[in-house]
Length: 313
Length: 258
Image (cartoon, rainbow over all chains, first blue to last red; front, side, top):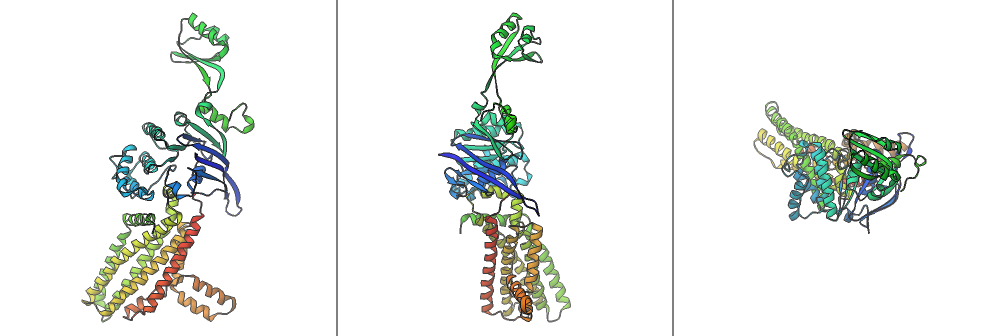
């Protein structure tokens, strides 16, 4: 059974005051996320990521299509007891302390009173806020609120967790901690579905990603597959500041940075180039095949359909 | 009752208390103390009537203002600040949220009225040094005022489920004013003919009949309140508030939370 199954989910809004006209926020979306995977939902701002998450959370209603989470309909309360959700730029009841807020959400999620206090303490520890549980949220920084938001999403030990831009507002240390937390969730067997436009985060974390742009799914696949596209080129890196003339003759693109030179050239000329470097007594550091990065794939997918050539989906 | 409704209601109550809503009691206490001292000096034989009249009117106005201004933000503020997202993504049904919010504010108003009632009885004791049997009718007038609050709160929830806070405030306040003259409106409808009669009668029965719930003048004059009126008013307020709440739930169940 898939953890998340989206079947032609579509959302069109009516905009305008007098003359109502339709605005498509999400074109029919078909997507499956398997249990236990970290799935990245990528796209630029305004692509339809938050709309999709709101549809899955039952906050807005689809124009057409349906979705199932853990095999249940999206408005099924039994399913909602098994999911956690962090909205984008979360805002919480600022008259409550972090502990009171988590207690409240624990009550709403049906966490037994005996377990609640223990779980709240555990979660405060886990999101790095063990000492400020008694502080009112109105005194929290944006990053601290984000941590509380993550805490409330995992408090009731959900099977599937949805994060909308979880790294937003966090400093580098905070981002690292959230990445570690997501990996931990995966190790615990949970499914993590998160939206982001920060590609290195997705590349470091995700098993699979989907790319959405202008409300349309542009591509979906495993990170390993999307980034293993060898273009028949290799990258040579050596120490030094000089580029042998024979290498230039092979058509290598060279870039000198400090005391390191990087050259990209055809795989067929790899042995000749290495021989040339040996002759010049230059210290070879690495030889790696050139791969398509997630960023390259993302940029390709964002281009209009006709402008892309040779891109796999 | 679902435990989730109880949790939402107690959080709404906690919000009202922490947002210092009960501070209005300080203003009310000052008003009643000032009135008691002043009335004792300028009124002859009618101190009791003036204190009852002024006290009950103040209880009603303070409560209605709180019911309107907190009630209109109960849903719209949660949508605007997106606090609703983390509530409705849990096993909480939309109707449970609306009903929980209603009971939370209703509880706040009942507590507020309880403390104000102590103020009214205190002022009464100050001006006349003793209670009379007829003072017991004050409790009935206070009960009717609470019924008014329930209707106002449900209307505030209804309007805030689909319109902006400002418009909701205007709608609810207008209905409160029109409803306070509902008996006059019904009288006017009886005097007209044709379409006007049909329209006036429709409006007169659609707006909440707050005038039937206002027995302040009778109580101030120490007149008894018939048991039948207590029964009818209770049934009327419960049915009206329930219908308004059902309307709020119906609208909210189909609303996209953008």
